[in-house]
Image (cartoon, rainbow, N blue to C red; front, side, top):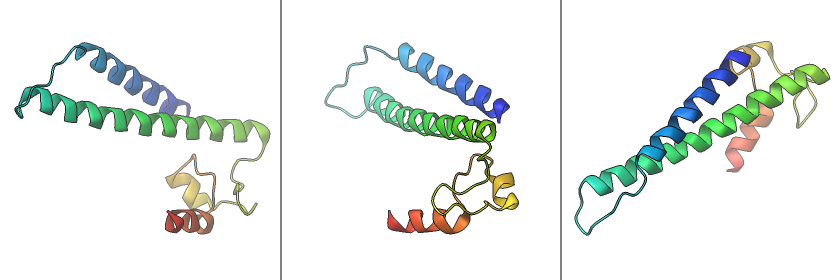
Length: 105
């Protein structure tokens, strides 16, 4: 998980640097380079926010390891299946609770 943190932090730094390089763009009335750059920036912002969320999840999982509560579902308190943790090491909910959360959205 620590390698994943380093990777996410690096990718976030790269996205921040890329956005500094495109500062001061003007957008005219015609669809063109400005519009393409705006769409790219919106995509980058969404990716940045998603990576920040993932980084927070991984850090929370490491804290849970330190606290001795890793692999315990935050919702129901049951043990999270090892196969789920292998697939998603930062999982904080068992499959059942995560499924309920997803269907409510």
